[in-house]
Length: 407
Image 1 (cartoon, rainbow, N blue to C red):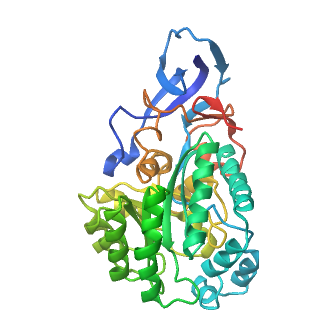
Image 2: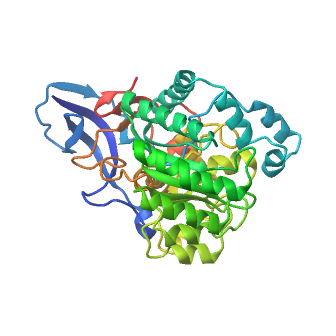
Image 3: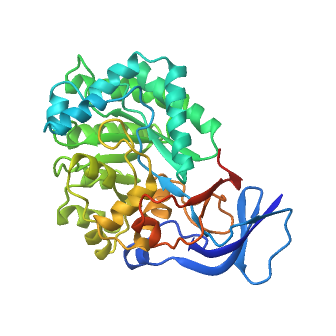
């Protein structure tokens, strides 16, 4: 089946085959064609260009809209139960994230709700969020556990992620985040033992996760705890990812690089030492401006990372407590408005580099021959600059995932 997109005012996000991430000055570059066409065959990008159009079984006119790669969201917590809107009121009254957590709220509150929620109901709630994200242009999603904090509940979350992965056309990757907080009734030492000796072996035995993650930050897990968990996870075949430097400069970036983490995420607090540690590594610095926006935290030093020759990814951190939105278009806008990225830099951070940060930039994240046809067709009149500038004006006409309109 050959589907031809015609009438494309601008085709952007073009990347040569074999390029898996953008770094340094390349963050500000992307391939673009005017008055273009794009050919899809068997759910993948077969060809694109200008001028004479190839034959196809189906023609889809873009009517002067842009075509760009679908967003990739490499950091989400969208398998959760219920809501934490009561904590939203606490934040309005002036309580900090740390104060809410110290009162037994936050992650522990979500764990209590999840424990009481049957797996089928948890799946239904989570699938609705995934479908909402796809409708807003996201074609690849990493989903973490971490609201279980008990072995069976962590496994329940990961089974839900597996069901989602089998149900939707978006690319889905699963991350085991048992070390998101210390479960109720445990000392930290006993809980780390539980993660390493019971949770990780069971996750690996069932093949439920692609990655292992740790919240290495003030008040949560230390560098030593993190190293132990990552070492055990890596032994079982799970590549590390890290939560680091959201609340304090924690050493999480450095331990992540030491264990070849695919990404180190948050980075609201950064010194030059973190930038230096990442030089020459395969680790993608990933910033979560939605969390900064919702919690009033500093925004990551994205420009400094790029000027140092590094790449960055942007992701939503979609979760019930600190970033309750999976709108990657808004993430892109925050990248421009609050982090001073150019629209091209922000696009690369929300597509190819975020795909790299979840290990899928070989199959999605750019307009590249052979990649999945995960694409956004905009309404007429939009340019790459107007997408973040008009940050809440509807801009999507159609989302294609594997070449078909997303439902």
